[in-house]
Image 1 (cartoon, rainbow, N blue to C red):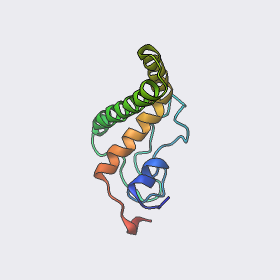
Image 2: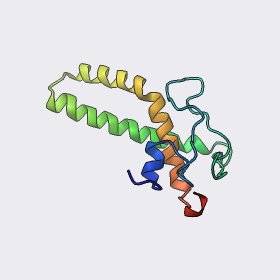
Image 3: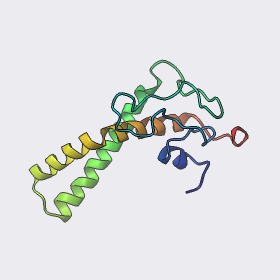
Image 4: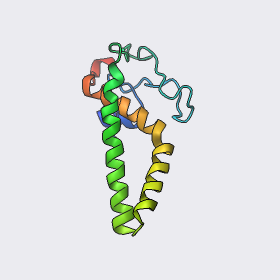
Length: 124
C-alpha cells in the first residue's frame, strides 16, 4: 500500500494530513463506548480533527452510500449468483449491517474528513 495517500489514511485509520498519527483513540471499532472517539488534534502533526461543531454530520451521507453499495453488492451476490430468496437476502443484509455498523461509521468519518484535508509532505 502506498503510504501518504487518502486510501492509506482511510484503510489504516491515520491522520489525513500526515498519514502518521492515529485518527481514533481506540484501535478496535467494536468497543461501542469509544468507537468514534478521536483526539481533538493529531498527536503527530497537530491537525485539528474537529473542524467545526457538527462537522461529521456530513459523514452520514458517506455512511449511507457505503450501506447502499454493500446492499447492492450483497443483493447481486446472494440473489443473482447464489439464488437466495429475497427474505434470506434481507436477513443476511440486516445481520451484516448490524455487525459492520461500527466499522462503517468509522470509515465514513475518515472518508469525509479526507475530502477536506489534504496530505502535506512537510508534516511527516
